[in-house]
Image 1 (cartoon, rainbow, N blue to C red):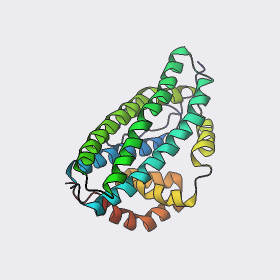
Image 2: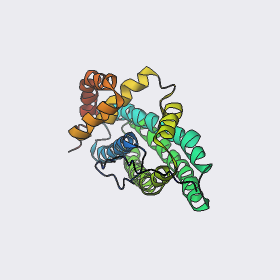
Image 3: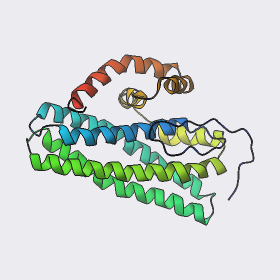
Amino acid sequence: MSTIQTTAYVEQWRLPRQVAAPEGPVDVKMMYVMHHAFRRDLVMFAEAAAVTPADDRETWGALSRRWQVFSEILHHHHSGEDAGLWPWLLEVVDAGERATLEAMEAEHAEIDPILQACAAGFARLSTHADEDTRAALAVRLCAAKESLGRHLRHEETQAIAIVQSVMTQEEWEGLEAEHFRRGVPLRQVLKLVPWCAHDVPGPLRRQAFAKSGKANELLWRLTRPAFERRERVAFRHVR
């Protein structure tokens, strides 16, 4: 394994529910923001499925549309890792680290069928008052929360530690640009910005916008009111 020789370590973030933040020269703050949003969503979806009446089709329709936002963003994130991050790292790591990275890919494959089953449940409940589907969906969402939670824990404790040991900031930025930001349509950006920023502690949110640029902060201010209205509808029965 090649090791980056540097003392210029970046201050890392610890967001709610985050497990670890390995030290190193690479600024992975936005990765942690994404992880925060994935965890936040699955907690909220699991709670909503447990308490939303099966015959409340308006709310189930809102939840189904909200699930589509979550699943599209997660799919794009995992696709970027599978196509860009893991292959890049596999070229430079040792055998032990290779096993960790191959496990990352395998965990993505484990998560996908659970998410597809959840999508089908939301779609069914948006058109049918089906208590059995609601109960099954509640179980599947708990499974999704546990499965993705294990994956994010594994990524934060081991995979990101590998990133910090073998990558430079410039290499990370190039990979982000190629595999995570390139080709994202504006309609997706308009969903992504308020979704990412939602519930991030204020000081960290301000730092994130300082890093990502004024354009994203402006988009957040413009899209936040409508996003939060939709959140209130989708999660109206939670808490």
